[in-house]
Amino acid sequence: MHCNLLQLPAELLRMIIEEVRLDVVIEDPLVIKPVLINHSLINWSGTCSYFRDLLAPDVFKSVKLVNHEKSGSSLDTVAKSQHNVHVKELHFIGSALGDAHSEEAAFSDTEKIFPCCVDGLISDLQRFPSLERLTLDFDYESEDTDGISWPEYTFAEEETPEQVLEAEASVAWRALMSRTYSALSQNRSPHFKHLEIRNLIWKDVSTYKDAAFHDFLSHIEQFTFSIHVHESLQGWELDRSLIEKLDVYFFNHLASVTTLSIKGKETEYTWLDASIHTPLALKVDQMPSLTTLHLDLIFISPELSDFLVGHKDTIEELILRDCYASTGPETDIDNGIYWSQLFTSLCSTCPAQLQRLELVYTSVDSLSFEDILFTEEFKDMLPILLQDSKRILFPYAIEPNGPDLPLQYCWEECFAAFLKGEDQRSWDRLAGLVQGNVKKAGKSESKGVKVSVSVLQMGKWGCTEPLEIFPA
Image 1: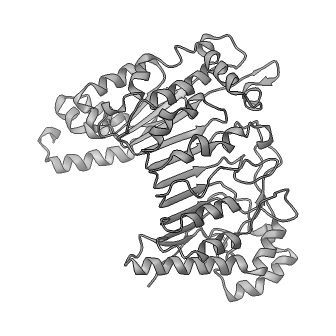
Image 2: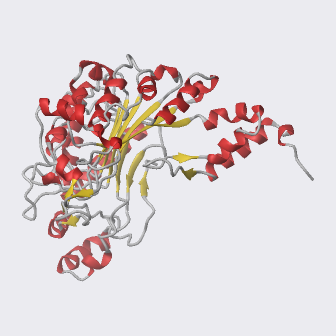
Image 3: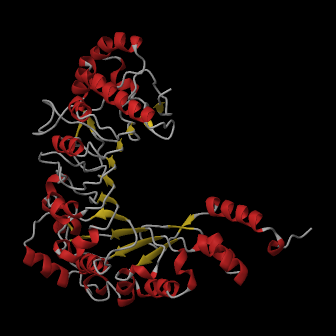
């Protein structure tokens, strides 16, 4: 028996569309950093005008743009059509293939690297009136030339303003970043509110200093960025000047931001003053309306503590994912702090709006049961664990000694802090305050305190489910 899809009720068709949208998503191999594309929906929408109109909100909800003429022309067609109202997410992928010392046109042509049709789209995002989120993602490949890796050669040296301009005029991938941000700055009072920058390149861009770019940033309400570190590099080989200027280039101008998300790199944790760390430039007077702070792969520091204390009247959610403390004789850190110092500082201000507190670990494979089971320190910890199976082993760590190496845990510091108990007591006080705020607000399971137990919660070996604590 055959069923004519055109005769099915609209509600049933929407259910079928939802299943296809969720289950048949594959990667587009033509994009350097693959973007998830649902080709089944695209092919379905091409069967007839009825399904094209019906599926348009799903097909055009999230679109990608690459710095190629063909990609720009294709999206320009969408912008001129009635389907432009369906575009809510735009993912721009800027790529420059080749070697830094190569004469290949793909690398050296600073004009073709950013076609006019792409420039026209980025500089006038009002053409997508329903746009909510813009993601910028710069990617490139590299090869060795005469034994020199071009990213290492390129990233390791600090540049003067004149050298930055010279590089943007002669090197394609530098021109690509400059022209992308310049085009973006043409959007006066942007209607979309979420800007994400993936793989932030550790080099200056002249546009970062422009007043037009700063004005653009002042309208953004959600700002997300992650930091690019090439796999062959360590922190001491990088030009730290850009990260240290993030306040001047970005943070000082995020006047409307309510949500800030920062992600480090597995091979380059940030936020501490040491030879292989790069401090971030968060200041108390930045982002006065901040309500949510999400940190991923970050070392805690006094600056973070001060920043949170300075936002005690607005901060509602604090999520720390795979974050670590680093202090003690095993490190060369000058400004490391204990977890208890961070928790106590925040708790002492009584942040009345804080209703979500999460400490989550997803990359703790090396922190195994066998590492500590037969140590003398574990014998001292055992009586405490028998009394309180929910006791947390707060992680202390240092930067790995080389690329592609795992984080090194400071076991002596972990054990000493556990036995001292101040980390736990300060966490309990802060968690209690948050639970009280949730209760006062009349909320339940949508907010609260979450601790990833895994192997960090000593009485829950092998458990992968999070422990969630909510007020009764």
